[in-house]
Length: 426
Image 1 (cartoon, rainbow, N blue to C red):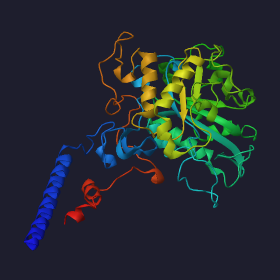
Image 2: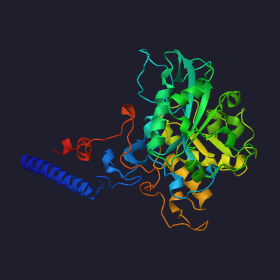
Image 3: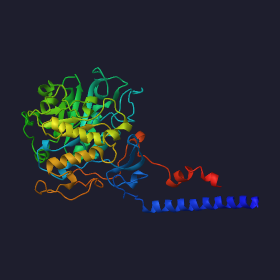
């Protein structure tokens, strides 16, 4: 009798295990059948590879916020002039990358291990294609040339050097030549002492033909020319230097004569506070009509950027808006710009441009030619970024290799092998 009971219990366990396995398989196939894939997934949808996500999205995650499973994340900006055009340049908000050249996995050209912080994850060309329109570049005299370095004490070393600056400037020239309606701004942290070094550098890179002349820059906080006027005149490259004397010597605009700027590094991310940088005039000054908002910590950490670019960024934009006398930032400078919990810097830029250009909560709701405040009825988060007629780019967004798109194993394998108690049933 006992043996029969034992056999019966064993049979029950086997039957239960088979039944559970059947339910697991059924659930898995239902999930696969209903899941989005092949470019149909939208923002915050689960994904397993880059091609699952729609145009302008990539498959990533944000463990810093407890979001370890991959989901589709914004990776491209809506170019605001493609929705509402013809306004003065200073009426728009643009994405700027901090230390645009300091790229994860950038090879050392000096044959030594580089000792420097990294701030971005893809090439300058890719940044521009993803909607970045402002570049922060640190330029130094080095090895008889001008190099991009992430260094200290005003000197470039072989272990802090990235590449000759002309390489990156040629990327900018290629982008401008291929996209004749786009405008790019370069802000130089300037350690170049070679006479006429910068002006010759831009000339040799072929960028002089796009140069916005200092003589045409507003000096007393007036509006800039309209974006249409800038495009028609081919004045599509704005360049600023941190050295005041170069405005008279080389015709390169002194940054803080034209731009208001908050403090960079940790002071610029402190909640509830938006102090001006010491070189800048007070943020509520009316003597300059461009506002550069820095939002990045002193020590960049890739994995924390998605958390930084969530709610704290939106709060800081509001804080700086008030500190600047209700002036919306024209440039938003960040590290690891694609990292977020879904929409990140792109949603915040959409919001800024929507409010200032058409009175809507996002530029995606703006309607070209419609009265201010006439907004399309859309839901947030939006799906993929809108296709732009001017400077719009589509396709899967990719990181460099060390920050590559995140994949995860087959769901069934995870589910099956994470249930060790099934062995007990058998």
